[in-house]
Amino acid sequence: MHVPPVNRAGPLAAYRALLAAGALTADDSQGFAAERLQDLWTKLRGYDPPLRAPAFSLSRLLRLRPTEGAPEDHAGGLYLVGEVGRGKSMLMDLFFQHADVVRKRRIHFHAFMQEVHARIHAWKAANPDGADPIPPLADSIALEAALLCFDEFQVNDITDALLLGRLFTLLFDRGVVVVATSNTLPDNLFRGRPGRDAFLPFIALLKQRLDVLVLDGATDYRRRRLGGLQAWHVPANASAERALDAAFTAFANGAAAGPRTLRVMGRRFAVPLAAGCVARFDFAALCGQPLGPGDYLALATHFEALVLDGVPRLSPDNFDEARRFMTLIDALYEHRVKLVASADAAPDALYRSGEGAQAFERTSSRLAEMQSRKYLELAHLT
Ligand SMILES: Nc1ncnc2c1ncn2[C@@H]1O[C@H](COP(=O)(O)OP(=O)(O)OP(=O)(O)O)[C@@H](O)[C@H]1O
Ligand SMILES: [Mg+2]
Image (tube, rainbow, N blue to C red):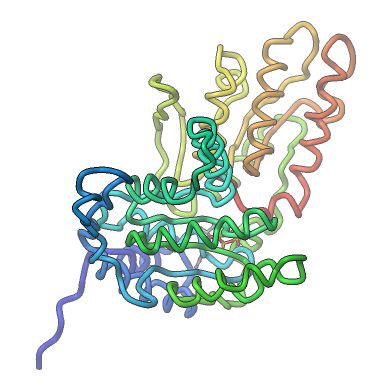
């Protein structure tokens, strides 16, 4: 009997390897999604649709229509949908990491929309004749990526809703394949909002071009992993250190630990200890050195969780450390990074009085929120 060879590459094998290593728990709906992602992975091997000629170029005049590579219905990609913590982002990231496509891009949908608005704005400033900015925008996005992976796809306002319909039509025309994660089924996008009727063709387009996969497992893995997690430990003694060790291990999810280097604007930023999506620092190493917002931002986008040892009491006497700590917390908060720390005092008693105490109030309020179950269950914003 002929047994087809097992494909050792691709997201399915990677998913199975994580199961075998005990890093993931078996989950039928994830297994099914991993198979669909593998199918798409196979279709896309070496996918490199010919580039569409930019407007007014010679090849355009010669009527070059280089989009024959555009896939058929439902081959335009996948839409992974489900409740929080079901593993959508984890699976999409496995797919993205292994996708054998040279021009590929993974971006948080919110960041993508901000970029789209900025590019339209810049284009309009350079072309004040009132020409339509969407086709050249689609050209440039398609030029950068034949595979676009969007985390946390959602539509919040009518301007975006209408813009997306036109933009996605042109992107699909140009052969761009889309994989997205979302908490909302296409049919429920923008539901109950004024102007939704005008958005319906976009929903139809999404359903026509993307295979909708529902991850309907019963387990919220994020909640399960964080069950019983205590985020702030006072005082910073040996028992706090053990609790921080345990938090680090839980976040590491079986990944190997070691030092790591991030690149920040051409510089190197050394992370003394990291494993998977978690980093660990001593307060002195992270806030006692001349690091700036760019470094903290890099940390916040790279890591889903930060374990921080030994936050001291802060005052005008160590204001540089305090200021860096405030910048760090802002970056972590904005990217919903989970913070587990040991400290000499509770957040609202860390910086009691003196110059800077008032500025610290926002930090202590954020720190309080960052200990809440609700915050800990939010997805990381990359
Ligand atoms: N089968 C599994 N076993 C163990 N941990 C898992 C499993 N699936 C996912 N996880 C972990 O659970 C956490 C949540 O998963 P993930 O972020 O992918 O969820 P999500 O569906 O994208 O949630 P959200 O809708 O909030 O973005 C991640 O840390 C992930 O690594
Ligand atoms: Mg997610």
